[in-house]
Length: 168
View 1 (tube, rainbow, N blue to C red):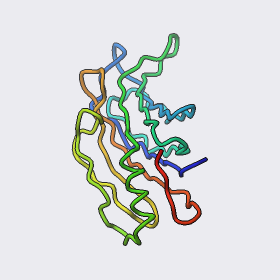
View 2 (view 1 turned 135 degrees about the vertical axis):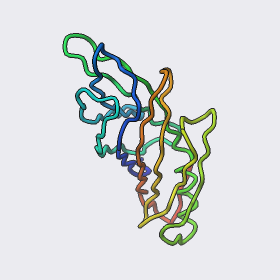
View 3 (view 1 turned 90 degrees about the horizontal axis):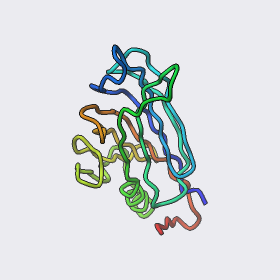
View 4 (view 1 turned 180 degrees about the vertical axis):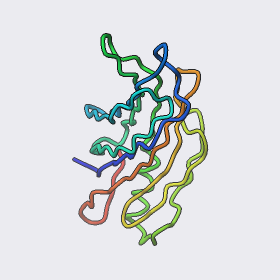
């Protein structure tokens, strides 16, 4: 059963660490369960602008979205630059609320604060807009000395029968 779609616009990387001697060629891979999508590669850039839109099917309520930034290498395995996790539970809670209320456009459905369970660099809000949930966020990369990724998440709900939305 599909709960909806998650569209992620990967805007840009900020202050990504240098992985090769003179440069980095970064790209982003998003995973969710058995799904895997990736952005284009930006050559010689520690502050890349991708503006790539990637889409994942929201199938399981307890599966996080994994974000990993890699450095493309020509003659060896690509180097991992850093990673982050995106918790989908706030979206599921917001979707459930939206099914039980007629929400006006622009309403703040939830505010997500940085904590030990997420990789947020600063708090951000989930907004209801034209039947979708939208959140702009900046993620701090983990397991690396520096680097952030700015992105926008858009959750498009699948309308279920009888206006019900169930979280397992």
